[in-house]
Length: 486
Image (spheres, rainbow, N blue to C red):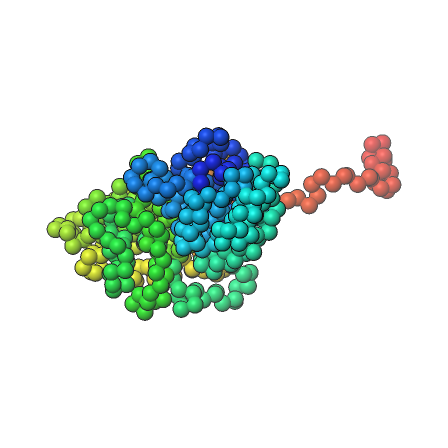
């Protein structure tokens, strides 16, 4: 998904109808009655060869109080702030209203890109409304009929150059992951040392009120982010560039992530989705825990998500200055970490105090260490020597009496490290043996904590003569066979 498109406008102008057409499903309720849509609804849109995220919003109304309509308006304004492009829809048959003019002014100030669309524009009855749309000062309106699918080709040609622009931006911002390793053994690995041109990208994630914004403020050396005792202050994923103890760094502050069942507010849902996107733009993810209540179920889910995305993980335990029995607490933390997060075995566990700044130097060293391991490359010759030793120490099982043979191993990718093992009958190899290899790989090549991907590929013994027709006997052989029979 290269960009996000928010469809906004007055009630009953056809926003949900266009949303359903772009996603190719009837996801949003559609009715002649205005105000049917109240929540934000996201969908994966397809328009020609464009793939993007589309957001259906509630109708904009001139209400600013805490009523239902007022909350709906604030939610829509929130979507405007988050979206890359806003599609402002007006009703070509009704014409331009004062409400349209007011919201055009709002979009002109708050949105980066605004596309004006005159919907219900089929037939001559809509010509006057389309001409009136020029008065909004948002450029030439796109003449649409969301119900009949007219005008989508014109919308495509407007979105195409914007899509390329956002795709280039996303490519620049996103870290390189799953890089193929070249075949040459003597090829020097690419240098991924953080630099001003390519800074180290770090995302700080965790439950609400764990101290994420306070931590980033302390690293930055100024109160750049809003903090306080209330949970859920941060809503946007904010990225800040800084020089962290000599390391060029781009750090993401994210919204606190609660259990999905507890997230009722639609704004919070958007905030959590924004935080998950920040993880995908990071190289190293710092999972921040509260020392008073560490390893809650949600903490485990957050850490597991970062690992499943293939990012290097550092676990930081905040508010350590409030702990009295530090040694006993630290011992319990390490035991709980090994037991509850076995997939991150060996990942750095650092105790810090975001309020006082204690332990931030150790956190910096742990992040650099995790980044270095994430980029590690092991030569093929060493891998196969290691594989032979592992097989000798613990041979693979023999399901059905036929032993699985592991013949060859090589590293295919880095960021995170990915390995390919050529073997016979890979579908019969149990997951426990793959875990045995992965855990031994961590210990033998000093790769603690980083996600390791291991793929088993088939390489069976082939008999070159199998399936060939038997050659006809020669005349001499026939003669000898005949004499032998006599």
